[in-house]
Structures are given as structure tokens and as C-alpha cells.
Length: 77
Figure (cartoon, rainbow, N blue to C red):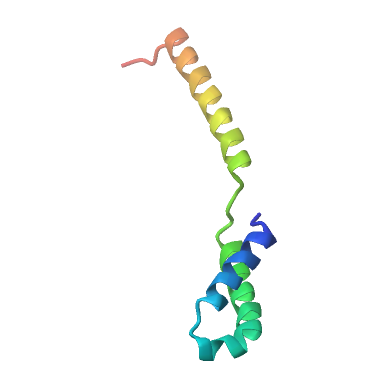
């Protein structure tokens, strides 16, 4: 799940990057940016770095077990 604080930071940076005339509507745009970013990122089904590393370790152990089984029980060729 994406950290809402990071979405707020990105939306604030987008609003702050507007020209001086656009700064007047920065608060409204910041809210809209936050909403758009949240919706887009939630649709991506992203995982945290920690969860990614856990899954990577699980996959590595699974591959090691498969390789050991393949050595123990060679496939007929």
C-alpha cells in the first residue's frame, strides 16, 4: 500500500510547481492531485519494498528446493 504521506508530498510539489497565477488555486489542485494519484496508485496494486524482499526470498528458497528435487529425481529424457 502506498504511504498517504508520500502522495501528499507529491501532490504538494505538483501544486507548488504551478506558475504564480496558478498558486491561487493550489489548495484545490493539491486535493485533486492527491485524489488522482491515490486512485492511480491503488489501481497498480503495488507492494512495499519489504513485502517484495520477503517474496523474493520465498521464491529463491522454492527454486532451491525444486533444483534439489530435480537432482534427486531426474526427469526421463
